[in-house]
Length: 231
Image (tube, rainbow, N blue to C red; front, side):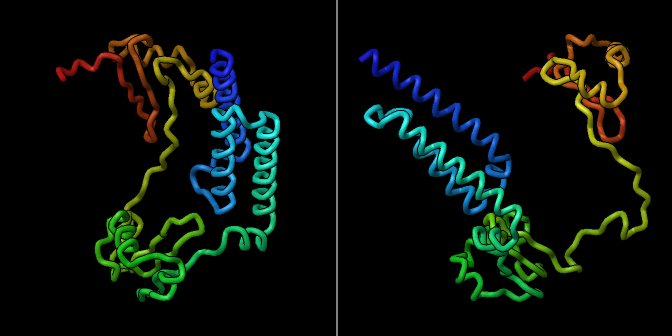
């Protein structure tokens, strides 16, 4: 019993670690925007890893070989997909127009097994409650729907009103979870002494700050451990 328990623990740790490594190798897009082959690879890896973790009757090395083979196939399929548009088109398909020039394409909805109710829900999630506001809607290969509104329903921008826009910069995190991010300070020609002085000027010490960021307008914004809130 104890031996089986130890074996299960070790197999589970190995399966979990293997999946973490494979997710890192296959890339972040595997989670953010899964293509067809990404989905198949992840499902198969998950199923084999789960069986490897708790089913001690299965041969450890055969299951590990299967995991490695699926991972290698997924990796090279992704590489081929990136390098060849023809292969990518065959593996992942192509985007499908659902609305074109303001007209709903019912046959494309049916072809993609996309019901009108599902489509309206997708539009509502994008804060569009009347599909007649839409100029173009496209079902992407990862299953998401991208929408372009008709010109008359687009929001007015500063450019439309000829209002000058000040240049904004990427926010720079200087303290995260109470630790000074020395790498960000160095990359942006900022010193730790400057940071200490700025925080001291506000009546705090470095040890009091949970989070500090130099925002897009160049202002130092800090959040302390004690917010002095009553609830």
